[in-house]
Image (cartoon, rainbow, N blue to C red; front, side, top):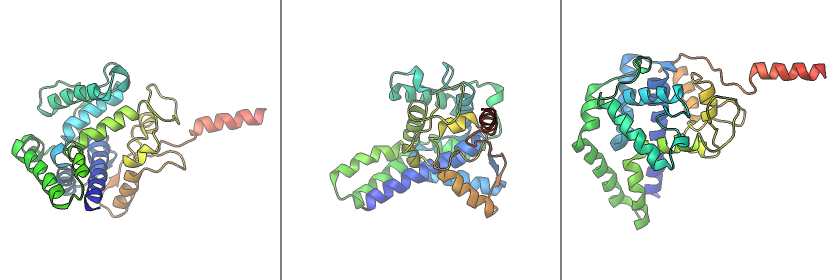
Length: 264
């Protein structure tokens, strides 16, 4: 039971910080915070994600490209241009590593506005000693608390938690589920898997209204990361910077339908 609890906690914390810090802050700047608070959140993201920590800079650039070229050949990770999720993620990995190492040349419009901390993003992230240290910690925990051999099969997921989340969100979120809004891409909202991804699988809502801090739009949709952001905003830890535009039904569409009903 201890191992399962640890796995669930690590899963949810990793996907939360990816959604909260790397996605909604680094890539979209949906909220602001002071420089000291930013450093704390940056460090927490590294400590939680461990061996699968993702550079906020490379993540932000890659994600901005994803929005600009969603489900086209220029999209760094559209499932509609790869035979399987493994090929998609290998392509994403190459592009991510180029940007993280400063080798890639993204368009100027995708640059800037993301947190950078060389100690964490360049030194610790690229250190094999640090990576092996995280792998050793996860393994030692399982050796100490695992009660069945099958539980060790969960270890590789700990090692690659960030890419695993990315694979689920980008593959499922553009192939499976329903659409609230017409958009130029093939994004979907994927319930009930969304509950495992802290709001990240409301892809159709997010791609239609990319700056909305709450990825949920309908009454039955719940974005857990947004709920945490609301609490942090009330406590004064962060300040929400972008308006909520993802509303269903869309005001214009609702007005159009109401007008048509009156005319009938």
